[in-house]
Amino acid sequence: MTLRRILIFAGVLLILFLGMYSWNQRTRTLDDLAANIGLELSGAVLQPMRAVEDVASGFWERYFDLVGVREENERLKARLADLESRLLANGEDLAELKRLRALIQLPVDESWRPLGARVLAGRMGPNAVLDSITISRGYATGGRPGTPLVTHLGLVGRVLRASAHTATALLLTDPGSRIAVFSQNSRALGILVGRGTGRKLEVNFVQRDANVKQDEVLITSGLDGKYPKGIPVARVLSVAPSDYTQFMAIYAEPLVDLQHLEEVLLLEPTGIAQPAGEPEGPPPVFVGPPPPPAAVTP
Image (tube, rainbow, N blue to C red; front, side, top):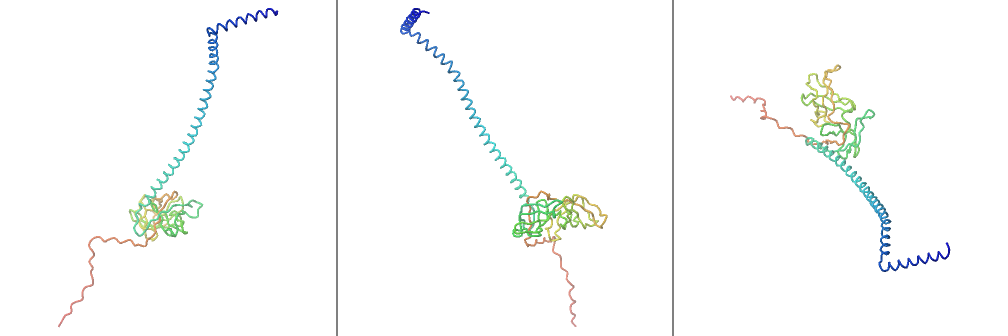
């Protein structure tokens, strides 16, 4: 292209520009067109950016919402665990309250004072020296050796040895245990002997003519002076004549579940003698020796 053509082309462009500028100054058409195009381009660019911003903002807000939900979930889980532990504790307290209420309903006369005690440990089993339990009372708090132990179901045993605030109680299943009993219905006397954990109790020295029945309850007779009279002890399992002695062969089982003891009552003797019952009917007539014969005067 020659210089002359370039100058002619430049002149034509200048004339067109000046003509369009003058026309635009009068009509503002080009300015409006440029503004519309600019707005469209701006909208085309800004709308995707705004959509991306909305997505990012929503994701961020949802993230914080999820974090808040997770924290709230953790708080609710901790609260639930706390409430469950309290519920379990309240259930255990309620069960203990029921057991203690049953214990205090045991009828004893004024010659014995009931004292509650907790079972701290047990030594039941084939490897234990004695069928025994450790309780939370000693000789300074009512748990002297020889003190009977009971629950609301019946006799447990008696204190064997004691320190100041704890004691070991011998259970009625121990082979060294001997309890004077009689059957509740037939009133047959006997000695209840322990034979070890998991084995039946044996009732010795019951006469062959005694009418002891199966399932009959054995209660303390009080004749040995170790236990109050009338405390339920065991239930008869079997009755048969002995093949080796002149007595009956009677076996029984304890009324109390000795392997799951938690609380017991100690029956401390008060030294107050139980008043004798009033005799029924009119008092007997005393008949003395005949009076001496009257003296005969001359």
